[in-house]
Amino acid sequence: GENVEQHPSTLSVQEGDSAVIKCTYSDSASNYFPWYKQELGKGPQLIIDIRSNVGEKKDQRIAVTLNKTAKHFSLHITETQPEDSAVYFCAASRWNTGNQFYFGTGTSLTVIP
Amino acid sequence: EAGVAQSPRYKIIEKRQSVAFWCNPISGHATLYWYQQILGQGPKLLIQFQNNGVVDDSQLPKDRFSAERLKGVDSTLKIQPAKLEDSAVYLCASRAPELFKTQYFGPGTRLLVL
Image (tube, rainbow over all chains, first blue to last red; front, side, top):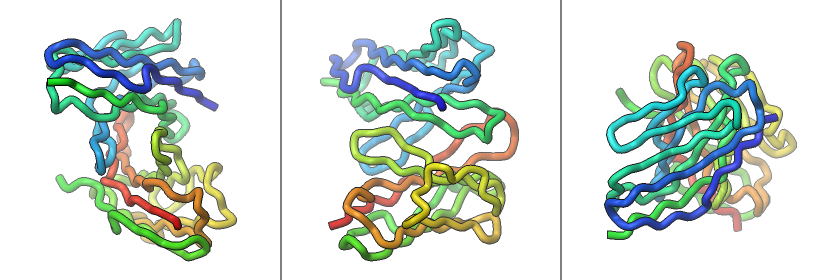
């Protein structure tokens, strides 16, 4: 089955700096890669996603890049703010197998004011 | 649009007791998932429903866990009897039937087994 690895497990940045979280996946057939933000006591919330036919996607301060050849994808957050502090999860999925998501182990991001 | 609803939000039980969790997905979402999230880990799929049928329950510990979605809408997940290692957050998610639609998660039920 699919195996998703995520790094780093913890990340601290100064407010206004950029944060980068990286994930690798093992199944070359995976073709959908969402990123979720989970705040304390809440369920994961989708923040951005990318399909395998696209190399990069951006939404305001958040961007995701995908390298299918190397089987890795990354989340980039620019101009970080204290409210970006949360745990971020990447996931990989094959749409033709019922869309089961395989999650990474999470990155705890702390933005220091 | 209302999100995925789950109850209860918190539950504390002793080992060997039984517990049940309830999930109401987003209206019109045919696919429903139950995940287990142990502290410090990513969610792990327990069971996936398409309408009222089971698509994947390969990771559900069937000797103690059961789940149903009788009318293709709400779902319940039951643990009987609970073990200490079942302490986790149980997340419900749902997805619309169209292609390339993502999963939306509920707030989860935090279970502590003593």
